[in-house]
Structure formats: structure tokens, C-alpha cells
Length: 254
Image (cartoon, rainbow, N blue to C red; front, side):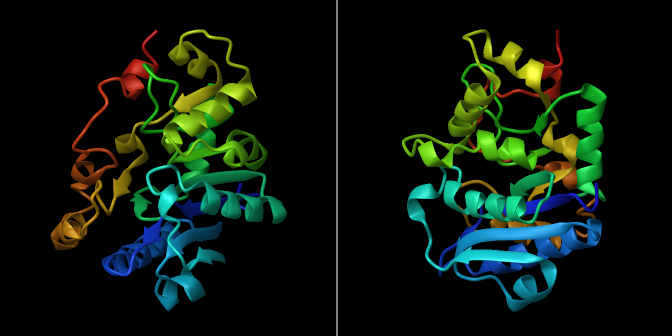
């Protein structure tokens, strides 16, 4: 998988008054680089530019818009994701792991882990938090699949800016796999596999909206951070939780 797979780290914006995000980004990219030393890392984001170390040493491809694309925040960041995805296609990568650049995964070689999940379940794509069974939503922040498949389901040319990335990705999955009106969870079970953030060891370094440095400061002060990682996993501290969000228990409960 090493020569034909890449990591796309994206869904990141930095306003002028959010300079602490530069430190978060450098920490995250350092961790990704250390845990995935043989994989090409594409970083795409917008706003205030990251530290030079990030641009020069911690990613292999740097794609950045110096202006915050404000209408895409909370809506999936379709433009910068597409920019990174197109680069992965141009470079010929067959598989892609896409996630938020301000988070980390406390697993070495995350691509190999995800590929094993796909092979064991004979599915095309792995998704995580945000996938629902009451609405036709699919977790848009962390996924692993073929680059060609992501190209099909990431429908940025027909993006609905009145809603979020979850619904837009759901729309892309509907169109790609031929949704016919059945129960959404039954449809997803045919085509995807699902992993909870805690089992991916997916740590959110930033915290929920409205963004501030509180969670980052807490993590930095935790001398047993990796041991205590479950406290910091993605979605753990969201203030508003959808009661119909899929978990591994509900997804695999037949």
C-alpha cells in the first residue's frame, strides 16, 4: 500500500485571530509524519498559512488558499478537499485516506489498518463519525477508499451549500451506489464499513465550534495524553449530539 496510497489532510482553516491553530497543525503533521513515514502527505487548507516547518518538512504536497473560504466552513470544505483530491489523482495514487488536518490517529500506518478493515469486510469504503441512520448522512471527515471512488462521491461540482458535508457526502454515495429508497442503514451496510473514533484512535485536537484553544491547552498539559486518549476522541465533547448517529454496535447489529 505504501507506494500507491496517500494521506489527504484537509478541512482546516485559520483566521488571523486563530494563530494557536498553527501550533495544532504542526503537532498534527509531525505526528502523521512520524507514524506514516512512507506515505505521501497532501495538506490542503485556507486562511493564515501554517508554520514554515509544516510547509517545508512535514508534508509532501502543500496546497493553500490565503483567503478563508468562509461559506465552506461547517459545510465540508469542498473546494480545498477537491484541490487535494485532484492532486492525488494527478500523482497516480490508487488509494486515499482523507481526514481533518487538526486531528491525529494514534495508530502507526493508518492506511494499512484501514485497508485491512476493507479487505476483511469486502467493502469499498470505510467511514466514521457523523454517519447516521435517521437521515441520509455519511461521515465526511474521515474515510478510506480508492481515489477513483472518492472522486465520484465527492460531488463538489453540485455541492449544496445550504447544508453540511455529511448530507453532501450522503448524496454522493446515493448517486454512486444507486440508492433505491430502502432503509438508509441497510443501504450503507451493503457498501461501506464503519469504525468508531475510539477504535481508530482518532483524537480531535481542536474541539467543537466555536473554536478556541481550550482543548489544545488541556491536551498539552496532559502528561498521560496517549494513555488518556479516549477522553479526547472525535465527537466526544460535541455539545449537540445526534441520537441517531451510527456506532459500530448499531451498524453491525443485524
